[in-house]
Image 1 (spheres, rainbow, N blue to C red):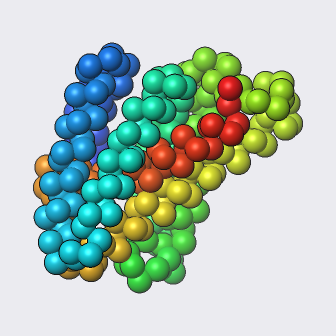
Image 2: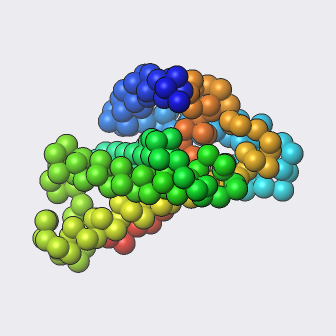
Image 3: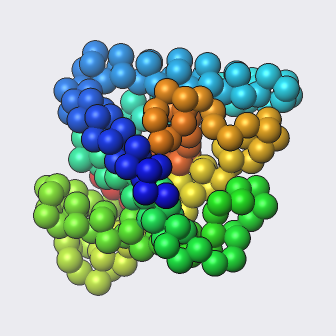
Length: 224
């Protein structure tokens, strides 16, 4: 666990600043960043789904729509909202990994033997705590301004914020399990080896590519 965790941390230390640069820089830099992600993930998906011809096209279509929604999410609602969604997904993955390794316990599903109930609960806890810290101390205090006029820090505002974080976290977990399911069908452990400690890029962003389109829909209904 320690060796794998160290690889994950080192990879994240290298990847995070690069990703944040393109996200905050925006414009053609962000467009280029999204294009690279799209082509790499499509390559990994095609390699993984070569024995799953029926779903190959739908996977490419979903990746395209997810990347397109990432473009709209950042350019419509701003960098802070975009980072907010990405942060929830990363913390969900991190919480599941840490809690699952420490507390172990019953397996969550046969789709992914490493997933446990303790990991699923840990994903929600870590994403919730980390996201609230981000909202309160790192981002602009008006990060989430809701259509229905709830005042910041009111009970209604807090409950809606908690609900949004938990929903995005759950969707991120579903994304993780979905990619794990297809990896199981393809009989492979990782979608690639581009990221030490993580595997392929698709392994790293499996939850994010699901969280982004659903988040865009959620914010369309809750934020002006």
